[in-house]
Image (cartoon, rainbow, N blue to C red; front, top):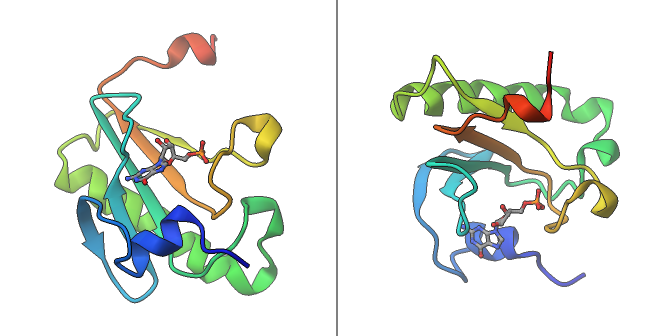
Length: 114
Ligand code: 5GP
């Protein structure tokens, strides 16, 4: 299987702006930001998409969310951010390696009107 762009970034075969890294994940700035703050929390394990995760991934998925929370604090957006996971091409997923979008500084409330 050919590596995804995120595997290449994790393996340092492609450059990226890395904000955080540990043994389980990497956090990078999105190359085409859709908000003033737009970072991606990416597991090192190449899970194709959330719907392909298994019970074995439960701890990893929780870890990714906690890292997103920590990064929101580091970027000082902890009081107002959005988390997005696109699952599948029809839902807008373009890179088939699970990732969490952390977005801040833009009002997305029109997408979810109350
Ligand atoms: P998706 O559409 O799969 O949910 O999100 C993929 C995201 O990855 C997009 O927001 C896109 O801008 C970002 N992206 C694609 N290629 C690269 C890259 O080479 N470097 C970085 N930093 N982000 C990328």
